[in-house]
Length: 291
Image (cartoon, rainbow, N blue to C red):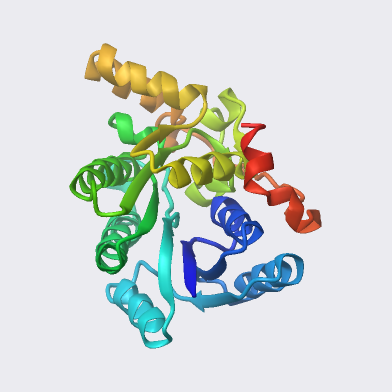
């Protein structure tokens, strides 16, 4: 039996992706740090969709975590046909004012873990002759991002790596899809410590459900690169048409400017009624018509 493995599956986009896979009858391995939230997702999806859900609680920013995850699935005979690398986080800070341990963990999670899981499971998929990998990047992949410098750099890495590996895997039966979302209601701003005016308050963020449905559909098509939302499409145009000095100035403004000039306040968080949906609400063919 083949499985879909989703990282960052306890909330937000990852949880929505898990629901979409489950609605299509795929058994799951769901990965995140929070055991209680993983168990809640497991209970909900097994009850609604009648699939097997295997939770695996781990901090993927730890150096040996990707190998431990791969060893777990291999030793339990769990063949991963679909891999969704969704886990990641950001930090609103001047680069030289940042907590270096947090920056290092960001690099490990956003880049190293994604790269190693793509490598390990990609090799398994190539040997099997089929498989699909989804890597979640961002509009941030398209420009330098003052006051979120490390996050923007990690997402540029994700997009570049994904496109290159997608090219290398042509004709193997394995595809790699990189999706670039714009602002999405996932609790991103709160986790990044953002406040005041920023791209979340200046735009209308997409819901995690709509973004996940878009990403799921593009992964199943085997698209190499997919932009979601008007801000991301505008970013793709700006990357090609505007001087880099202008795009990084725009990014600095959209990121909220220098955090040291802002009073710390509670960032807005967004919630959706995920727990009250029926499994049929996630049917991919139905959802795709609304995106």
